[in-house]
Amino acid sequence: MTPQTITLTASENDTMRVLVVEDDHETANYLIKGLRESGHVVDHAPDGVEGLEMARGQSYDAAIVDRMLPRLDGLSLVKRMREDGNETPVLFLSALGAVDDRVKGLKAGGDDYLTKPYAFAELLARVEALVRRRQPAAVQTRLQVGNLELDLLSRTAMRAGQPVDLQPREFLLLEYLMRHAGQVVTRTMLLENVWDYHFDPQTNVIDVHISRLRAKIDKGFDEPLLHTVRGAGYCLRAAA
Image (cartoon, rainbow, N blue to C red; front, side, top):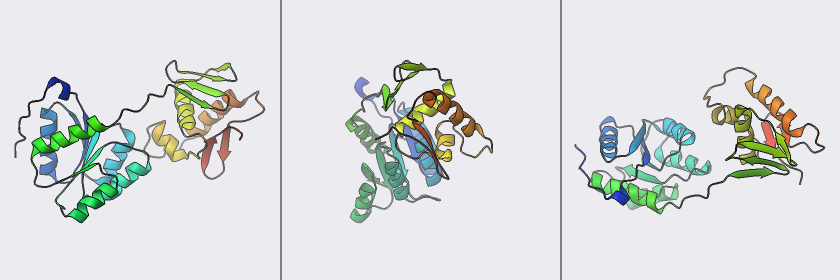
C-alpha cells in the first residue's frame, strides 16, 4: 500500500513527533512512510516493552499503538504510560473493532480508536486532531522545596538565599529529586532519568553524586532536605 498524498494548509503543517508501536513489519512501514511524507518525525517500536521504554525516555506529540503486541500488549502499555503521568495523546490502531474492544481501549487511557483496515488520510486527520486538542502545559521555570530553590532558566540554585554551586550532573540530579519531592526515588530511576543508563553500570556513581549534592545543599543547615531511605533509595523533602 502507498500512503495517500495529503495536502496540508500552513496552519496544519506543524511537524509532530510520533511514536508508532506496531509489530507487523508491513503495517509499520506503511505508517512510517505516510507520516514522514506528511512532514512528521517518527520513531518506531516493534513491541510493547520497547514502546514503553521509548515513551518514558522521549517526548512525543502523539503515539499510535497496536492492541496486539508481543511482550506487552497495547492496553497494558498505555495503562503504564498513564500511571507514569505520561499524557501523550494515544490513537489505538487495531483489527479488534467490536464496541467492547473500543471501550476497553478508551478506558485503558487511549484518546481515540481506529480499526484496521483504515484510510491513511483519516488516521492522519485523527492524530492531528488529538494533538490540536491537547492543551499546552504551563512551562515550569522554578522549583522549590522548603527554602531550596532551583531556577530552570538560569540553571542556578539557592538555599535560604545563599547560592549553591552545582556541576551540570548535580543540577540534573537535584532537578529530578525536586520534581519528585516527597517521593522515594530509587537508584534505577536515577540511572535511567539522570544518567540515561538502562542497565546497572556496577559503579558507585550515584553514591558519589548524592554525597556531593548533600554536602552542597544541607551542610551548615539545621534541617536536612536530602534523605537516604534504607533499602529503597532517596527522598528530598522539607520538614512538615
